[in-house]
Image (cartoon, rainbow, N blue to C red):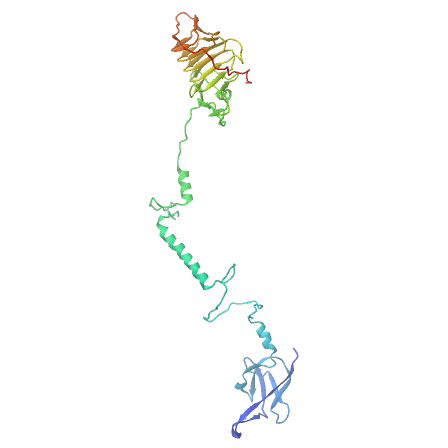
Length: 383
């Protein structure tokens, strides 16, 4: 940086001349910058006896004035031209906020006052905000302390690996503690017999448990037998249908069909002639004429606690009829045949016992029913 012409007058008060101000002449004058141990510039007197000293090649520096090697304290430390002051000030904070701070500030124990409240991340909090935050934290801490003894500590023991649990029955627990307890429970599931399924028309199929049709329920048993009797329970007909239908191919040896009550209506469409070793119990059974407009003969069946409506002649061959009612139109009757046993049964038309094997006798009673309900059977549904 090129130097410029620098001049400075040296003035002193002459104590011997009524303190008049006079020019200090004939001196060796220099300028030094920190640490002020060596001369930076030598200033020459611009003319004999002028008392003005100068140098034509001086840069703008922060200096002190020395006369004959002694620091002239009344002149202090000053800038030769003042430009450097502006540069220095540019590195300091400005009130308009245009200068970015590049280091930490030490306020020497002084305060910053009249601040706006912080409203975003990275902004300073004023006293009121900090106080409020502190109070909130204290409330949280006090609350935690208040309920501390109600909290179950779920911390593993470093030695045993077991968990430390407070014994207070009112204690709160960690979710994982409960999960571990549940995982450790041994629950015996509800046991169901493999020999029993349910037919629920409006239900949801559960293999080996629940089926929607009687056909699928009976077919679920793979190997029923005389020593492996199976059963289908019908709890109800559901809201979607009025009757359960035993469609063609439904019935099976040693698979018995039970109803929850005689309100369960079963339309039997599984053939006009059928031989099965099985039981119908607690049902209202319809042997209709719309599916088979012929007489029916069922062999080896057991009817127990049933109401049976037949719309053609009905023959029970080698059957067991227990506490059941048989109701047919006046033009049709029931025939008891072979080794059929009828115990405590009732017939609205006198039963014909002429076909019974010698030695068999039916205990028959009359029943006062003259009008049959409308035949609910329809042309055979597909199997």
